[in-house]
Image (cartoon, rainbow, N blue to C red; front, side, top):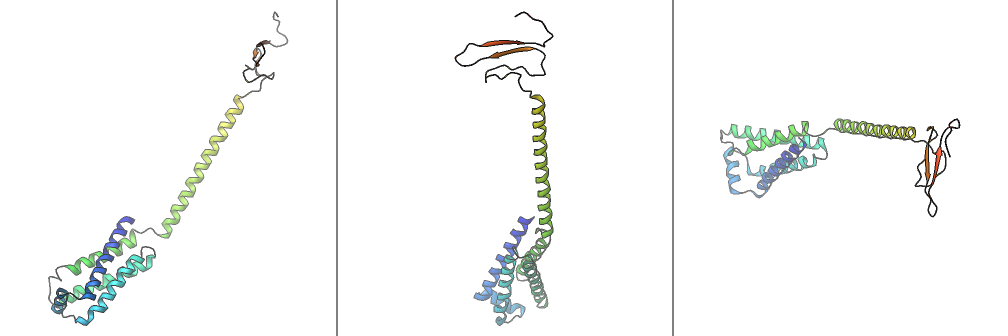
Length: 202
């Protein structure tokens, strides 16, 4: 929705800048329309200034919301007045529909600015949700680390006799077994381990 707000706002601003440029340059077709609806030519410059100010306000409003809202309201009222002027002059073509299209763009920019633009409250809510999600992820990672450490400490049991890296160790929890010591440069040695009460042949 925010992308739609940007698109509508830029279109409305561009349309009003184009209209303001025509008011300043005063092409012949525009002078004919003004004469048709009974608007003096001297009004063109003030009307152009209002349109340009509205366009700039829409663009600034992307970063400063209240300015965009004020500009959209101003342009909406401006083009409502333009339609009333055409009705009073009994120009039911409404200048080939141009003021109608400008009014639609102004209203659309106003509505999208009010309902599609992210507010400060929604931004704060989003930041809070991100913080909660990050805390949950950290908690799960910590729980997993603790479970892994607990499982590792339970499964591990130190050897009874020190052996080399290549040794097979007997844990104290074992009652019997074999220990094979393999050291570089020496013959492998085999030790038979059993409880002291057990008799076995040497």
